[in-house]
Length: 85
Image (cartoon, rainbow, N blue to C red; front, side, top):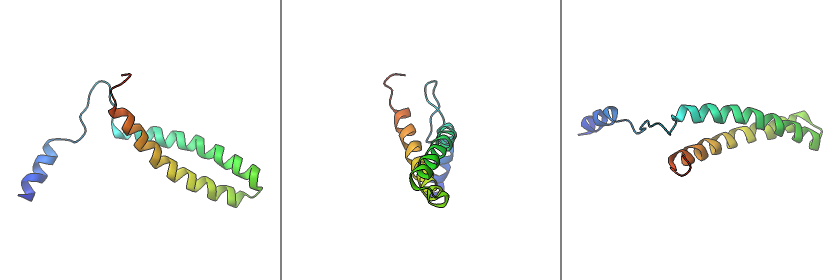
């Protein structure tokens, strides 16, 4: 029974391509590129406010990870909405 379920799941992908959607890997690439820009901004602002590079780098690192995950799910959510496509 489990083997049959695994075979069926391999036959049918959970992601369905269409002309208006995008693959999750594109969302990951967009999230990464945007986070690099955002993290550099956070690093500069944090350094300006604290005057300490170690603290600024810590803030920027946490910011990078949390906002990367949030952006990915935000993109996937909006990709599922047909409005405006």
